[in-house]
Image (tube, rainbow, N blue to C red; front, side, top):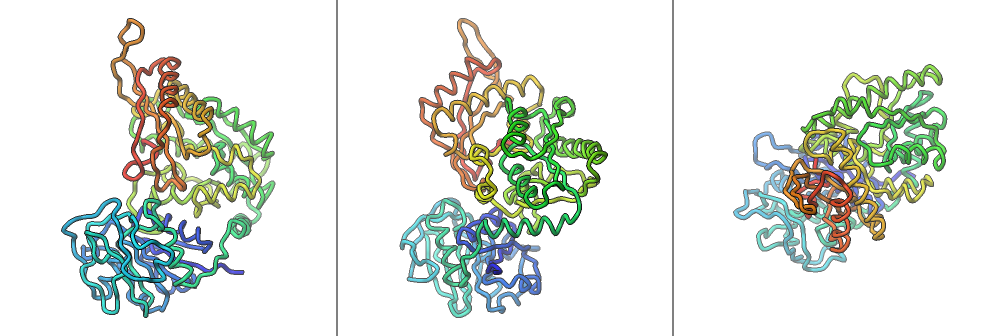
Length: 516
């Protein structure tokens, strides 16, 4: 059975994929298209509904992204979020102006009237606002559905045309009942059937892998993390012996990680893997490098070059490789480059931003449309061990992006020891699986300290721990004081080179989870 589909048109929102994720939580399939998708491209998807994302532009600015006015006449239900609402008003002859008082953060939202969009939602709730413009005059046929103290037209709609707009962001976790609102639009207004599941995705992904690869051979880089492991397991299920896995030690792994990964693939997953120890090569190229993007580019490019060398060696034994498999996820894509829309670049990810243009491989990325929780659900279906499946995420560039300032082997070793203590204490406290990520960051800052009767001048180590469901937003974890005390005492007493420990209490947004 073909899944009903909702289309998200991306106008540059950092949260476009998050909108899609919320739709999928309603068990309805969702795809993202660029804002300038043609009517024919949209109709080819046979969507039950269309969502216009937010975006950084002003609708009246020169060069602002717009859509074909034909889309409004397709008879397909539409929901505009933030910029999407402003665009609807602007296109249908309402009025949008710069707000006298901008709204960023939580604001009490008052629902004005009973409506299917707000079914099962309290009359007053907190909604996440992030806008400098707002609608000051609604198009003909629209009525006000909700307001805030600074934004009278916070939600509006035209029931006859089934076109709706909301000025707040229901897709972020900060908005109360935001997922319910999206579900109301998708299920009650669009009438989409809840048939999307990881079972259906697994079957579709296996078919797509087989279709893409054909009789070709795939080489897959694995790190021991959830993403690359699930990707490898899924591809292995699809094409079996046509897959060869390679694990490259890039010199920026955690303490004991290389040994753990080799053992896991051999003894638990039973997926053949070639181990390549290239620590010396990476560290020579990274030595003294401070700029974050340069670190990522070096690691990404070197990783591929070593892959090509390794593949040539394997080709002599097994035959040629045509594809490179990666565990790229939705958040990797949206934060790196606008693949499907004009989203602003925050940082490049090793999976999508650091690959050389002349590499010989075609890419196989079976998880590219999934969020982390979906990947874990898929991994459970593939019978991946729980201790691996719920392992905390670890960035592809590894400790290189947790080591601020110049990279040296000495500084990496200091960070490894501190990070190992953080993980050990978090595990002892029984919190490891309830925390999205917890780790140490070595800063380039030195501070004065006193140990015994001697003055010290050594590094400051920061501890980072966050709760999240998809890495698009995150809140800092309020770790127990006694746990923070144990972590601090152990790091300072056991790790030479650190004399001060601080705790990061920044949420995302405005910060990112990783420091670089």
